[in-house]
Image (cartoon, rainbow, N blue to C red):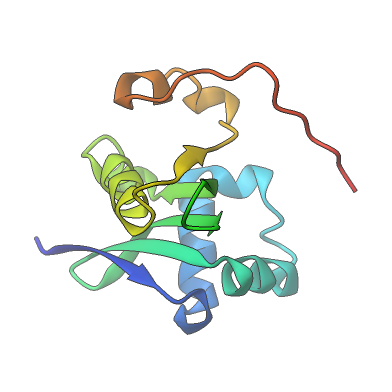
Length: 133
């Protein structure tokens, strides 16, 4: 089984593949996967996208916005359920970090994943705020 983790230009990704990963990961429950135009914009305008392919199939994506100096906002990390619990999520985060090694990574966790992040070195931050449209 061949696994490739690499930085990718979001504009070059096949949206159907991306949507499949979001749906199969469970993240599609909290993202506008039925609004394909919005999802396309989300992927296209992220300035740091890292993907994982296994035998050529897209199975994971980390979508971020970064200034590459101070902070990287890891907006989405999605791994197909069939490939979860084998290190892909951690590899996507590590690859994201390597692209901006001086920047801290900030993310908002899905409730189901909140206990995962401390195990890989993240610390809880209690003063995050969200202003919804």
